[in-house]
Length: 147
Ligand SMILES: CC(C)(COP(=O)(O)OP(=O)(O)OC[C@H]1O[C@@H](n2cnc3c(N)ncnc32)[C@H](O)[C@@H]1OP(=O)(O)O)[C@@H](O)C(=O)NCCC(=O)NCCS
Image 1 (cartoon, protein in one colour):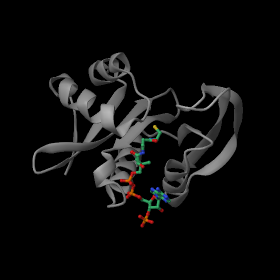
Image 2 (cartoon, rainbow, N blue to C red):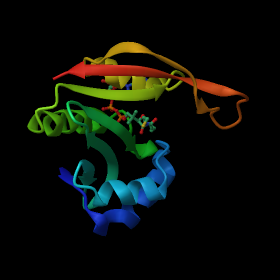
Image 3 (cartoon, rainbow, N blue to C red):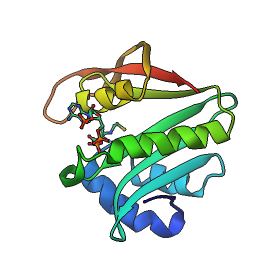
């Protein structure tokens, strides 16, 4: 089941993100849960929060800010279900496009976005700090989906 989260879910969301590691800080999650222009969706099974996505409303577009699924629950369709729900939210806002940025080395996420129909718009050089254990910085791939 996918349902919108609110500030009461902060502790569960933080616990999920500790394992999902999508790169969202505690303060970003708190801000997203309390913002009128941001929707935080949770993927639940047996009353347990196992996945989430954050989508923000921009003036003409929407931006996927994060998506994460508990490692043991991956490759079972949760990411795809969350992406469909994110698209529905953005369509409800009449957003023209759904935008996102992803580390060039995050192949799981890139495959998921490609499967959802996103195309590659460009690259931001050295946008992210290096992934754990790596030196230097990592490029961001910019992707979008026309809604
Ligand atoms: C990216 C992520 C959310 C995908 O979640 P998921 O629940 O595993 O995704 P799904 O099971 O719905 O996968 C849907 C499709 O995406 C693609 N995909 C997902 N993970 C993949 C992987 N590891 N390798 C290749 N393709 C993958 C496949 O096409 C897959 O379909 P298939 O299983 O029928 O082949 C998950 O890997 C995750 O939480 N990663 C860590 C957090 C992160 O990096 N988030 C993105 C940046 S914010």
